[in-house]
Length: 199
Image 1 (spheres, helix red, strand yellow):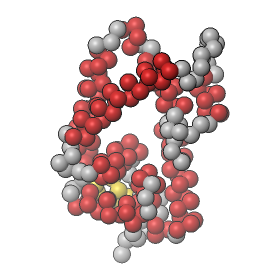
Image 2 (cartoon, one colour; image 1 turned 90 degrees about the vertical axis):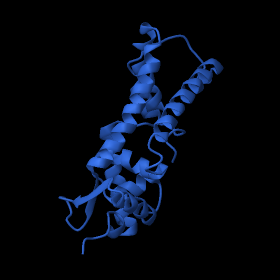
Image 3 (cartoon, helix red, strand yellow; image 1 turned 180 degrees about the vertical axis):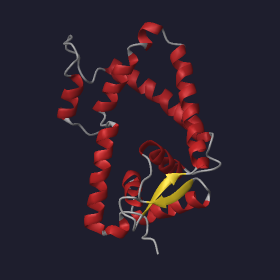
């Protein structure tokens, strides 16, 4: 399910519970939608420019794997496949190329030594840091050109927008990852839920 088009009333209620009541405004106000679309174009441009900085070294799916592992720590193949939305065999090929390029390392899984975890190598972390620093600098440059009184109120608004779109907190994301990995193990067998068993 695409989280950007899903709607969870419980999540929305939790996000808006502390918001003071205001005048009724249509959720589909053209002005609000147009403003959000303009902001989205800026964010998309920032992301595209940051990807262009590293596109000579990694493909978009490979970059997504690196960012996913950077965000959540070492992962098994099942979690990577679930995040990409692909079969584990496809995720295996992507990760093998990253290992061969020196951007991912394999390491023992302390919770199940039959399987290996994929972790960023020093070079992989450097690449992701380069990407994120480019994005932060670009966004900071835009924010600095905004009036200070508007800039101070952006954090809660953007957080509420992300929650309404289905973005989850780190704790929630960890729980979802555990659930997806467990489901892969039950439906496809343990060999598909992690990297191939060690020989």
